[in-house]
Length: 161
Length: 161
DNA sequence: CGAAGATACTTTCATAATGTAATCGTTTAT
DNA sequence: ATAAACGATTACATTATGAAAGTATCTTCG
Image (cartoon, rainbow over all chains, first blue to last red; front, side, top):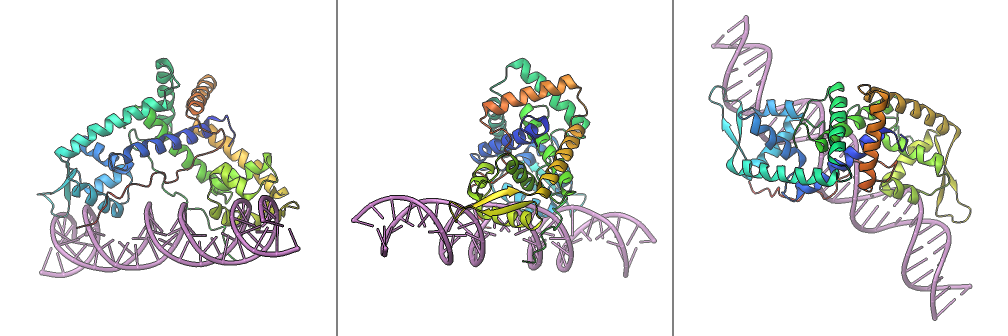
């Protein structure tokens, strides 16, 4: 909770980085969740909504609307799964692949702007340290935990005037 | 947007750190906002709600309920400001000071758990690097930007079936 | 002085985010 | 074949949050 404490700095900078990236993505009319989905579909094509929701920790019911939107914009396609008609087989479209490249460009610009204070050696060192901490903390590489409500603040808010 | 990219790692770890800290605070029946307020009141006693909302970037109308809660729990006190009866003069109570110490303890435990992968030298290095980046990015030391909706995602969600 | 405007806090209201549970069609197991 | 399980979807409740109006107070200026 103090100014120079690394844990606080991490939370502070992490939020800042996420905010900045969110702003940049908005130019492409995308949210971070959208980008995460597109990125995952590139390497894990044909997965179902269930699998997608598990991997990205997005609630299945929320995923519906997100995919509706991405599909309407022709970035993603829901194909029927021949083996099981309950499941969809999700795929990146051509447009989806193209926008993914633009996302990559945005991400590189974002990172460059974010780390402009550091030289190459320092960036490398920072990356290593973060990676070590992340690994030890059991974070899945490439999956942003989001900021979901976890323990949902206990109702210490009894409202009796 | 890739696995080993420092910007992503930063956002990912920052969210993780914030989540973990939020969980630990919940044990004390406090939210991060509560903790931020208590901490600020220790060093900036007698400020008004207006000032508080500006410093912590909390919407004034939201602050009302938060302070109602803290005051009901006797952690904070709204004293009248003799010079201007529109303003409150906010103060930490004795209980507030005590819980602040417990918050400090929780924060230290949190940080220790978070950085257990790193030795002292690495922690120092990490802190320096984060500080450099944070300063260059214009972040106010000690103020968490929160995750407020910034540009509010453009309505690319025209719902025309 | 006293009216007009600004300011601080509070309240009300509209909207958005997100989770729970029910629903529908399909598949699997007995 | 029937029951249970499952994936996707929808409906609904809850919560978060900001915009704006309301109330009291202060300041400014005629």
